[in-house]
Amino acid sequence: MLPFEIRAATLGDEEQMLRVARHLNSVNLPHDRDEIHEIVSLSHKSFTGEIKDPRLRQYVFVLIDRAKDHIIGTSMIIAQLGRRGAPYIYFDVLDEERYSATIDRHFHHTLLRIGYSYDGPTEIGGLVIMPEYRRTDRLGTFISYVRFLYLAAHRELFQQEVLAELLPPLEPDGTSHLWEALGRRFTDLTYAEADRLSKKNKEFIKGLFPEGPIHASLLPEEAQKVIGKTGLQTRGVEKLLRRIGFRYAHRVDPFDGGPHYTARMDEITLIADTKRTRADRPYSPDVGDRKGILAVEMPEPPFFRAVLGHFREGPRGVAVDDEAWETLNLHHSSPLIVLPIE
Image (cartoon, rainbow, N blue to C red):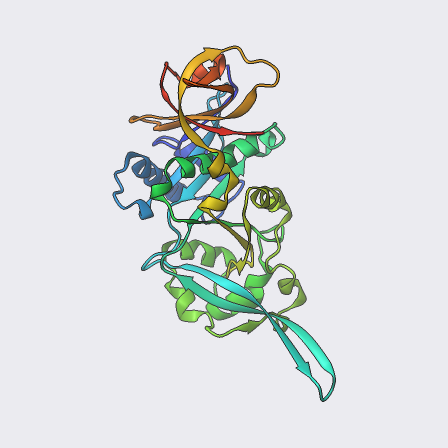
């Protein structure tokens, strides 16, 4: 039996997802029972197509330990971050040079300028694995890559620009030095309060944050140091993103200074490598066979399932290893989505 699989989050997953969310507690996956219920409901309606406007959809994938039938990780796709009434908000990180010939002084400054997009990118986020599984081979790759397989299979539902927001260095208690030095002074909210409120209503940011450029050199040194920097817990994600075509967009989160990485669909190698095909036959894998994410879609819950398995390409489709074939309940000519993992 294959030990792990990924499927779409379904109604009834809320309590297990709440347990996983405790290890991330972000805006996309908060450790809050009511919000987790809302997230699962939104995902369910997205996969079923009940939400007619594809820009309003949000897809949640859950990683399952099949032996225990437990959710041990999640990832998600937000179809569009930034639209009328709920803009995508960020700081542009700008460079400025100043020189005085009179006193022969030259300075390099970093400026932060708030920006808004009402036709924003697709966002990938909500990536978390339970601590006891983080060293298990390829699980992080599996739950992360499945989002790109889905993007590739349904490109018409998503924006051309894809965004990943990475966490910056935070204090052990979750404190953000940039927020304490900047955002809190303009809102009188804690970082956690502002982060949570921004998911429901972003008006306070536009109403209270300064519109002009902010010289970062006026901020305390510990706040300056986190601007555009990736925290230790997300450096592996940064490395992965760079490898598949993402780059630092010189934009950061206006609350904590975490870097924004972006890529266009056509620049993401995993999207280019994904293909729709058909299952040919089961077979017993051998050394040297290709390995990848093998996924199927269905009209009833859970709507989407994926496993890691071996495959061989042929003239009539893809031969799939016996365990993956059985787990996905494949038949000859079953539609299949394949993303090779080298």
